[in-house]
Image (tube, rainbow, N blue to C red; front, side):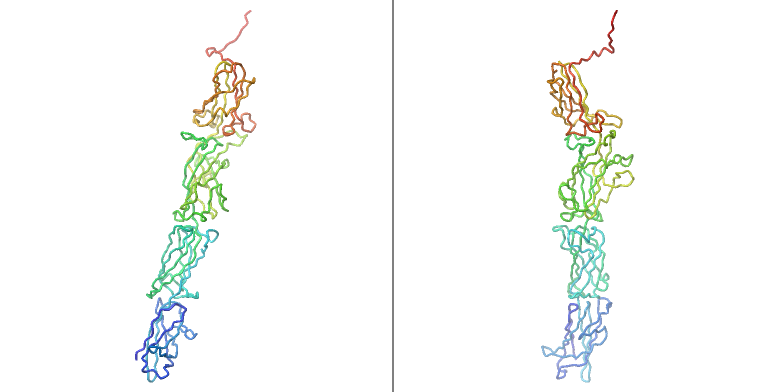
Amino acid sequence: MEAVLDDLVVQSCSNAQVRLHVDPVVLPPDRILAGAQLRFSYDGPGLNPAATPVIYAGQPYAAGFPISLDLVFTAEGNLQAPIELRYNDAGRLRLQLTYADASLSLAASGTVLFYPSAFRVTSPLDNATAAGAPKLAAGLPFAATVTAVCGDGTVTPNFAWPTQLSVTDVQPSGGRAGVLAPTSLVAADFSAGRATPDLTYSEVGNVTLQAQAANYLGSGREISGSGQIGRFMPHHFRLTPGSLIPRVDSGCVPAATFTYLDEPLALSFTLAAENAANDRTQNYVGAYAKFSGDEDEAAPAGEVYLLTAVDAPGGSATSLSGRLQVDGRQRDSGWAAGSADFCLRLRLARAALPLPPDGPFNDVRFGVVLQDADGVAIAALDLDSDGDGVADSAQAAGAAVLRQGRLRLVNAHGSELLPLALPVLAEYYNGTSFVPHGADSCTALALTDFSFVADPAGLPGADAFTPLVAGAGALNWTSGPGSPGAVTVTAELAALPWLQFDWNADASYDNPTARATFGIYKGSERIIYLRETTWR
């Protein structure tokens, strides 16, 4: 007698209706075969580690255990008897049905393949926004769990099948998809229906982690699922030194080789956000960029941006950080592809009065210490700004020469009938005394930067100015005033305060003064000594 059981492919945790087909000739008139027995065995994958039972008529039955049932055949088409089974797991079951009585004996077999309806993808790193926690540095490992489940969420513990991992829905919008590793799971990675790989992701932002298993047990069925993963931030910043512009407001041509103490200079540098493998994280932009560095923007909470300075690092280092004045912080443009350029205007203050002059400082390096609102900081520190032998900041530009300077006016005298020149000298402190500053041909002064007080009233002030060249210039009376007297000259240095000096030792900086005197004559250069005597 021929009997056939259907082969089925059914979602896990769903009822599977297996139909037994037989030749109707031998069936009793009521078409009922009472006392048939059905057994099942697990046919893969693996060896049924979960020992999940089959449920028939509300009762669980273990593999190999006989299920007694009555087969009731319908007259629809070929005679067939439906058998309702349920299996809350994944895998292939082989069914064996037998029946025997005094007049009839039959046997049939078939398979039912149960597959999960989906994957449930979870991770402790499940932030879907651009802020807050949880968060992780890009490139560091994070845990995820891929669980095979029924439609009602029941885990299918026998599931084990090669599964591919990928990322979709990359945030920020329009951002670059980073590198996920690993991207595949093997069947052995699953235990009790779950795989718990350690993954890495190379970019900043949020992603959807997608799991997909194809052609489960050759059935052509695909199982998939996804979960939110994030937020990823940079692992560190890398600073690339930029340019240093001495005397930035002076417009020196050729470029100046020094800067006076208290005079502005400028420097620039580039900052790049990187992952743990030192690759740039190009999605550190927009809301995912947590470092501003621009005084025209509100700094994110937790942002740190400090500057350091040291002369002769690595040798007889002199820390100058306490004298550093920051006049401006600018970001030249927004963050783009994980990188941004920054510019700083700085001044290094003179020693506070009444302390004596100091310097010169011939090898000054400027350093940067920063972190963004997530605590991401520069990893490669290369400048020891306090001389303790430990690098504490990142050098932002090349070396600078800084000198304390002053402008000195020299008294002059001559005939009231002849032209007169009053020397105007730029000087700097060489560590011992003030000396002529031959490197200064750039300090811009004009006749209008000087004031004149005549005694007696009516004497004219200078009518021309010779600009500084190699540190020396002059105020000129191109013709004599015609009558004797004196003119007190003051250089008004409010716009060039770094050239003021404490001329009267009152612990405050003053403008320099001098006197041009007319009507005083100079003796012959051939006479060394002259004395009048009275002959008797």
